[in-house]
Length: 64
Image (cartoon, rainbow, N blue to C red; front, side, top):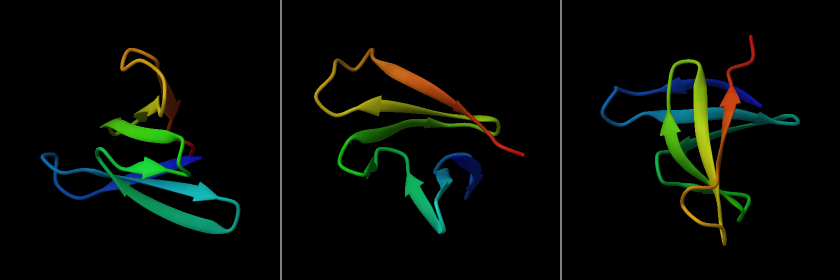
């Protein structure tokens, strides 16, 4: 679950909740060995998938 971001616009860090854990991931980071952070925005984060073409992405909406 995408819960927000940290840092300056030039170097954003996406923040997720994974059960009881909070995970911070900078642009380009790999999460859970499967997902790559492609873009971090104020209301969405775009993730790609390891082993899939660069064009295969998913936008995850901020949860409020």
